[in-house]
Amino acid sequence: MKVGMSLTAWVLRQQSMHPGARGQLSTLLTHVSLAARMIAHEVSQAPLTGLVGHAGATNVQGEEQAKLDIVADELFLDAMGTSDLVSTMVSEEREEPEYVSDHSGQGHYTIFYDPLDGSSNIDVNVTVGSIFGIYRQRPNDRGRLTDLFRPGREQVAAGYVMYGASTILVLATEDSKVQGFTLQSEIGEFFLTHPDMQMPEVGKSYSCNQSRQPHWSDAMVAVARRFRDDDVGGEKRTARYVGSLIADFHRTLIKGGIFMYPGEREKPEGKLRLMYEAAPLAFLAEKAGGGAHDGKVRILDKVATKLHERTPLFIGSRVDVEDAFARLNG
Ligand code: P6P
Image (tube, protein in one colour):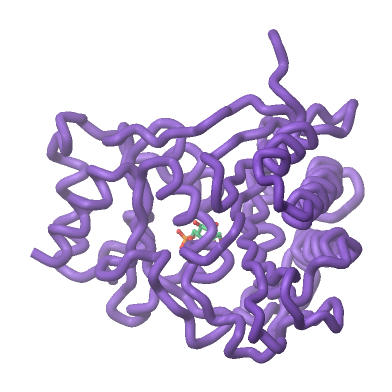
């Protein structure tokens, strides 16, 4: 099989298309690749190195931290911090932002990341992933908390790493389409295997945790029933739910469909986080021709008021997310 270009070559080609580019984003993406390779190694060896199970601590979300959550968080922070280009990093695993350099001027970046989403699945060897969203600092940013609250449409790059049967890095920049790179672990390089990813207009599956139905609004119950019973957009659906956001999103990106984690009566804000889960994936979904909303508002237009803000999430094929939106607001 002819292997596609390496991630390094792709990043440099992207940079060459922008004569004024200083190579900073290229450097950052190279450091993301380093983080991905280090975490992929730890995830693949976890059962052998004892890095499965819980660390005996809870994170800012009040969730039990898996040992790998902590390791992945440290690796991601270290890999990005050594780029000397990152001013601030916000992690799902840390209550406060990490100010990794005293730069607060122009040309530096803020990164929101979930170092290991779905880590509760590690012990049963189910796919997990890292998610990241990158923002270029604005001239007036001074490292204030309020400087961090920006709509996802201002991301200059976003993506995820999927630690599954293969390790796949899926990313897009502000001026590229969605690209998927697969890790050749013996060489330690990612190679382009999924160029210019486009989400099918309408999907093959719908994805939601049906056990939460008693907590849903009547409108949400009707939406799930429609995807179960009707041929939305001419397609009869199947239900698919891994319970690991990256696995469910990656399938939706490739095969089409819709992933839904709605708000609930007791938790109208939903479970998933805006800045380092929904916004990066929404950036990719829209770049791939799909869409993402929270039931009322486009995800990429939402501006957080808290670092670890949660949001309902409807994300996937354009026809499907529009159909869900219409029914939720009919
Ligand atoms: P539930 C994993 O814990 C996670 O954060 C996401 O990866 C996943 O989509 C969601 O929670 C699953 O939540 O309530 O269905 O178990």
